[in-house]
Each structure stands twice: as structure tokens, then as C-alpha cells.
Length: 263
Image: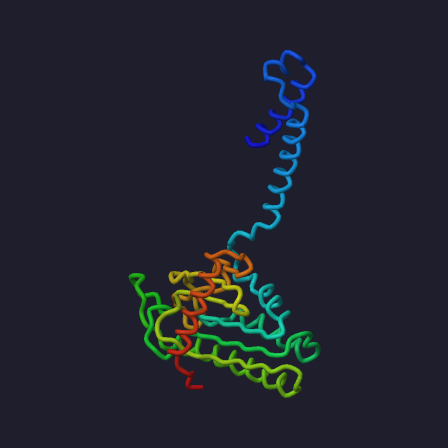
């Protein structure tokens, strides 16, 4: 609409300059100068509009947990890397971290310090998720399955801790990796990268998996299928800044209240 108005003023000014009746009707104003000014205004309006589009911060989007590799790689471009996780077993993130940390043994790049903190459920407690699917579809606590998940997380912890020790021993990069346990069931999946970017999603707590031995069905959230909202301080908006700060504060609070695993 603004473009049409400016072009209209420009055209009227030109016509008034060269068509006497129109000029007389408009009382002899400096039509050409006005027309040229309106043309300049039109061009400036177009340029400013294009500039506004080019500098507009990216809109918040959603990604899938399968995209975590890209976020991990980007985080490791920094001199000081800090990655925090709150969720279920962290298997998807573990795989990405393992391969990225392994590369530090040969090529640390700009990275000088890495801190990884992972919060997982206390699988030693009775839980509705994960659990056995009862005859009527209701959850039934399943200690054997919880123990299986705890053993898997223990293995992740030991592998990452061993790799961190090997890297730190080389003396080029200091790496620390720590697991802690929170009370309650896994509902939220949160990943925080370098205090700048947060991914947050909700597990499908009704997701089921069929076990082969024994032949049973369990409630088992699938982290790799979880969609995640993206919040980044690079958006340079008050909403993004507040969201990132809130999730960091939430994670730090949960971390301080968490317990060390018995292993």
C-alpha cells in the first residue's frame, strides 16, 4: 500500500509538471522536485524493507532429536564447550558426544575445555514410566527393566568418563563428564549448548516397546523420536533471552538437587 501511494505521488508530480491543466489545478507547486522526492522515498522504503528482512532474527523452530549431531558439532567449535542434558537415558546424545570427543584425541581444534553434565532418572525407584504395560493398559512397575536401563546408563557414564580421562591426560584439552540422578519420571528432554542455545521437548510417555525375552510390552519413551523446540540467544529478542535463561536456571536447580549414582 505504501509503495502504491509513493508511486502515485511520483506519477502525479510528473504529469503536473508537463500537463498544464493538471498543474494549474494543483496551484503551481514544484511538481518535478516533489515527484523526485517521492521517487527517492519509494526507493528508500524498498531498501529499508529489504534490510529489515535481512537482519530479522530467525524464528523459533522445531527440530528432531536425530538432528542433535549438528548442534553438538557446532558447540565444539567454541573454546569452552558446555553441554547439559536432562531427560531419559540420553542415548541419542551419548552417541554424538562419544564420536565428537574421540576426535579431540587427534584434532582438538580451538577447544580447550569441555564440561558435560547429564541428568537421568533414578532407575532404582518405582516408576510408572518406564514400566510394564498391565493387562488393562495401566502401568505396572518393572524393576528388571529399570535395572536394565540403569546398567545401560552406567555403561555410557564409564565410557564417556574413560574417554574424558584419556583426552585430559594428553594435556591439550580438559574434559569433565558427570552423571547425576533426579527423582521422578522422564517427561522433559532438555539439551543446553554453551549457555546460548536450548532444545526442549516432551517425551511420549505412552510409547510402547515389545520385549522379546521375556515376551512383554513396556512403556518406554523414544528419545530419538522427540521433537524439540529451539531457543537461541542469537535471536536477540527478549523472549529468546528469557527462555534460555529460564531453562538454564531450571537445569542448574535440578542439578544441585540431584544425587550421585551408586555406581
